[in-house]
Image 1 (spheres, rainbow, N blue to C red):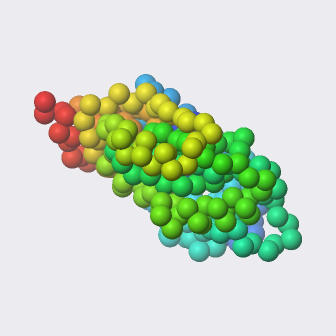
Image 2 (cartoon, helix red, strand yellow):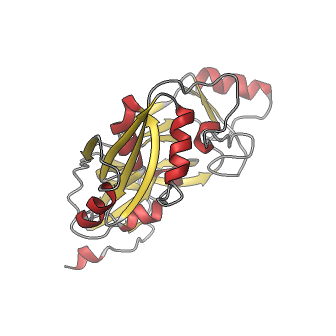
Length: 265
């Protein structure tokens, strides 16, 4: 089995039965497309994961719920499969004819504990989902515009003062902490929000989880692309993107992991 993707909104891993040993060439592509059906591993609280991580290689690609394997050792994706969604880098200057962003778009601010803030845009109907995908603790809808081009232009303007990206290590560092309400309210006072959101993840953390790359333990929950698991008296935060490409082996590894400070209290 190979981890070939993840669901940051609802919390889940996409797993292919592929073992990475497919032959090269068109025959292998045909076999993979028809046979390698993706399975979904929910990461609900209380789920027991019991896997070791084997070799890591390119996660290939997913097409119509089927997985096309790739043997390239580059992970999580080789150059052939490392495709960037063009809209992810849009600044509102896109001139492509097949524009697919004519829906109403929301411009929002997101807060990550304790005091990291970002601006972002998304289709208006999926704003709450987008906040959850990013692992935001709070959000504020500050404007609605008629299409993605205008939204990206406005985002670029605001991003001169408020970042439009937050790195995963920053989000990890904020686990178990509360948002600085004073700093958040000071920021919002400049924008007169249309709607506010408090996003709950039910993690109930009382100490800082240790950053690790593991696929074994009792799931506490997910926060964006961070998977939180309890194992041997410690709590770990796993970046699910760092799991993509790994082969899964039944049974947990005996590798010793760093203990969280909370386990010594």
